[in-house]
Length: 215
Image 1 (cartoon, rainbow, N blue to C red):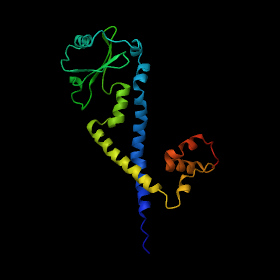
Image 2: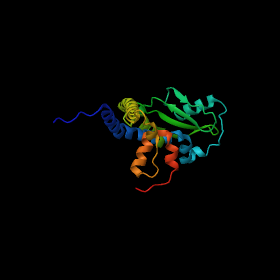
Image 3: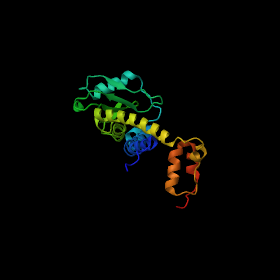
Image 4: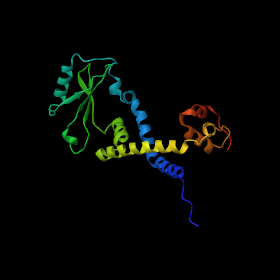
């Protein structure tokens, strides 16, 4: 006898499973790197003695002084500089977008940090050479320049399909809402993990606060 064809719900669950094992892993990396990038100014300053030495809240006498500092210390770079005006003062980040050293790369500006008190450059580096620009490149484009950006865009579409298929596969049949939202505290760890995943944020606080249960 011919094998019975799987139902639509079963097929959707399979799609959800394989997307979770592939695109889900990719977005786990994106989520971890994104979490670091939220605090990158603070972490970057903590790792750099030169940046920590600049007084908090320090501001330049004028922005023309900053421009003069850049032209004096980088006379060969005659293109446009982008000066980032920070709300809280302190070190002034600057970018030079078309350095000749990285013209072969899709995006690799020269990064400069200016001390607004001494009017001097205290750190320089090309995009990707510093820890957090490398992490940002991994987060945004998987270190693959334009192809990586396209891949992440496609992965974003895949993530939408992952979410939609997960919702479809979880959606309870008539009369099954109570069972679908029930969290089994004394179940095995695998079952507890399944309940956390399927119920999402509705029971996350219960999952995190409950004590370990026996297998």
